[in-house]
Amino acid sequence: MKSIAFRIAAVTLLMTGACSVHAQTAQPINVVTTAVPFLRISPDARAGGMGDLSIATNPDASSSYFNLGKVPFNESPHGINVTYTPWLKRLVNDVYLASLAGYHKLDENQAISASLRYFSLGSIQFTDNYGNPLQSFNPREFGIDVGYSRKLGEKTGFGVGLKYIYSNLAGGSVGGNTYKAGTSVAGDLGIYHNGQNEVGQGWSFGAALTNLGAKISYTDNADQKDFIPANLGIGTTYTSVLDESNKITFGLDINKLLVPTPPALGDSAGLVAYRQKSVVSSWFSSFGDAPGGFSEELKEFQISTGAEYWYANQFALRGGYFYENKTKGNRRYFTAGVGIKYNVFGLNFSYLIPTGSGINQNPLANTLRFSLVFDLNGENATNGGQ
Image (tube, rainbow, N blue to C red; front, top):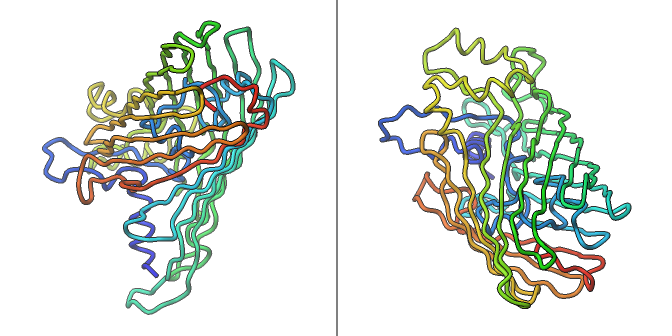
């Protein structure tokens, strides 16, 4: 078993990108970090195959993760998505993210949805300052979501959701310090406009506010509370129908954490203000609080671009690229994926191809992840997202 220092540092820091920077860069490194960063891991292999493109893609059973406004545009009345994502597979074999999502259409205009994300950090052996074993523990986190979505017209949909977050990283007393499980409640909002014509060709647009919720704490100290990864995402896709059997979609997503930028190193007054900043005010101030000004704010935007090709609505090929500035995490990678759909059953695979080496690689580098999709009325479904 790995030590707690290795396991938690490797998993948590790599998820936020704090370890994925070039030490030799001349630019100051100031990564925006949060608690429970697993909420920003793409929990679906289809999106994972397109560089995490997801906000305005054709709806499917995993839409509630990314944009609740898409859910009522699913063709089938019910759908379920199950995904397994190994994590740090090159280093450990028991760290993973498992997720389950589903929806049910109440009628042609309304739908409800629910999802579960469970992140396991594997088994950790706690030790004292001298390396003597204390106890072992399995740190774990999960998020449970429920949502309601409704069409506002023939082309536009809107959705709202509520989320419960649980994070237990230490499991009690460790080394004389007492830690508790952290909990929080958050909300999601999403809007989606489907501009495709009757054959499925055209532009679609989406925007989503996710993880809008209270800070989380692992101690009884009121000053030691961490922001959760509140996020604003906007996206667009264009689908071109080549003929009856072939169509291709291109898209772009832009994401920005609605979390304060840490102050410059050595700014003690700024650090106090950072810790005391309220959640709601941070959502708005996050667009203008970077120590480096507007130029640094622009570096905090993450970009996903991807494409998806469908043949006969049964076989899909996907590719994408994810970009993050080197001073804000330096996560940059290509992705590839395939999808197979037959009647009520679908299977998606994705593979992450890192652009760096060593510590600059993503924790999912060279990892194959997969999703099972159950379209409970698959014989009537026609959209490419299934």
